[in-house]
Structures are given as structure tokens and as C-alpha cells.
Amino acid sequence: MKKDTNNGIIIAPSILSADFSLLKEALDMIKESGADWVHVDVMDGHFVPNITIGPPVVECLRRATDMFLDVHLMIEDPDKFVPDFVSAGADLLTVHVEACNHLNRTIQLIKEYGIKAGVSLSPATPLASIEYLPEPVDMILLMTVNPGFGGQSYIPQMTGKIRKLREQLNRDGRNIDIQIDGGIGTDNIKEVTSAGANIIVTGSAFFNAPDPALFIKQLRDLAAFASQGEK
Image 1 (cartoon, rainbow, N blue to C red):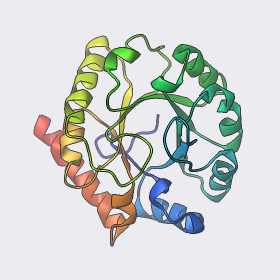
Image 2 (cartoon, rainbow, N blue to C red):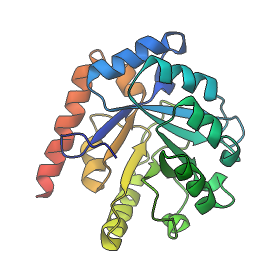
Image 3 (cartoon, helix red, strand yellow):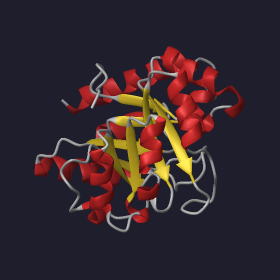
């Protein structure tokens, strides 16, 4: 998986917090800011209490940008929709362990299409739920807010969960990325990257920043400082 040159940190602004009437401009702003990926939150109104976008919009995003599309499926029965999102242009599909009847089968399905596969856990879901993940999984997304809405505050207890997961992966010799999503900004990025997260989703903090490029630089600098502090 593509790594940023700055200590392996990838920053992925979420278009959930963008003005949906100006998605092309939002994509251009993400690219010009120096961010790495575009995070796309797909919600179905069943698995989470909100409805956002589907494959047609992802297809439009794909035509409008060459950036890596990190598509987070917060939906029931994700297997049914994997082919549609792959055809739409997703580079990575992340599914929720809570939404999959047979998680290993879902991961294998995504990988058969030749794209990256991730697994997400909601805040209250224990790490034991992914103890027997298949080796081909590329990323584990730990939600640091309850899924369903943007603009929420980071749940402090998630720092310990991030650290525990990174320790487990290191102990098992598994080179898997840890993504975090929810309430991340300049006030806590050092905390979460020190704990072991290396892919950072940022939403409202990015789109509300007076200078998005400066905001991305600040995140990188703070993450680099956290990394140096561990040495």
C-alpha cells in the first residue's frame, strides 16, 4: 500500500464533510493540500442512521480525480455491493465486521477483484472479533467515533485500543496498516500516531480549516514529532 514519505503517515480527508454541490472543487482542494487519499463514507440508513452516497457518485469521483479512493462501506450485506463499488473505481473497500456474516469470505471476495481490502470495527467492538482475520487483509480501520455522522468528538478510550492492536500486529509479525476515523485534528494526532495508527482520516477539521494545505502540513509535522519521540 502506498506510504507517504513522512514517517509512513497517510492522510485521507473525508468528502463526507465537503459541500456535496461542489465535489469536484473538494477533490481538487484535497489534492492541492498535499493529502494522500480521498476517504469516501458510504452509509445506507440501516447499518448506520444516515444515508450518504452509492456507486454512481463514487464513479463520478473516479472520473474527477486520479487520487486513491478509500471507500468505507458502512452498509448491511456488503457482499452484494462489492462488484458495484469495484466497477465504480474504488481502490480500497473497507467493510465492518459487525455487518458481515462471513468476514473471511467478504475479504476474499474483495481481493479477488484485485483491489485492497480493509476491515472496520466500531468503538464498542472488541479486537477479539478480528483475531482470525485472513492474512490478505491490507488495513484495519478503528472507528474513533460511533459511525454514522461526521463532526463528532474523538472517544479518548480508543487510544488504548489503537495501541493494543498495534502491539498485537507487531507481536504476530503482521504488516497491516491501522486507519483511524473520527474526531482527528492537530490536538490529538500525536496521541493516535504514537499509539500506532498510520492512516489518518480527517473530515470537518480539514474542510473547516482556513488553509487546508497548512492544516495537512501541521498534521504531518505533529505526526513526525510523535514518531521521533518514540525513538
